[in-house]
Length: 44
Length: 215
Image (cartoon, rainbow over the protein chains, first blue to last red):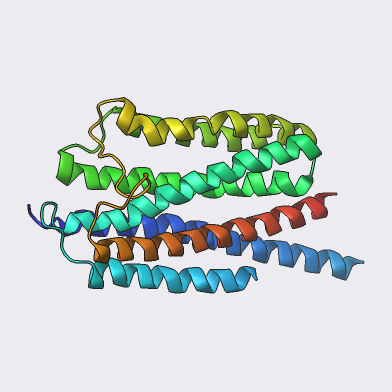
């Protein structure tokens, strides 16, 4: 059986993109929320 | 707590990659492509776990109308969909060199695809209904009904003749694999479970604050 490293790298690379992308999305939403809360505090 | 879980998950994932590529040996029949197992099997485990959590939290929500249970169900469904996508993609990439095809409509693969579509529908349903209480109630019912697919997925390899192999570890009796491969797999199980816990806690917190901001 050939080693098929290309398939292995594709699987791990794709997983890193999907999971890393979701992680980044959570961090970005957290930052946006902090900024929005900061703005509403300043307005008060 | 959430940040600590994130750090632990990251450390676990690094450990998992080291185990998968540095410690686990090259498998005799499949070669290095079998290393996809250290990604594919833990991600399907997390998908199972996520949807069981949705099932339990949905029952709790319907029984007690607790907003916290609804937030847990929502967050867990979202994270479950992410891990199911990883499961399907990694399985398909593993399938091409081993089975000669990216996809086949056998019972295991089809039931996982149905699971993915059902929980995508769950998230769409939540997004479509503006009234939060009604969205929570309808999605709780869907979260309970959709979980019926989980035993179907698990036992599909016994009930029907499938291209997908039967389970090697999530079954009664001892695992049918060498200890070093099992150890590498267990490290990845722990890492993926920590990542799931981090994602869900972070998402629950975001949902709570978003709901407070909108109230």
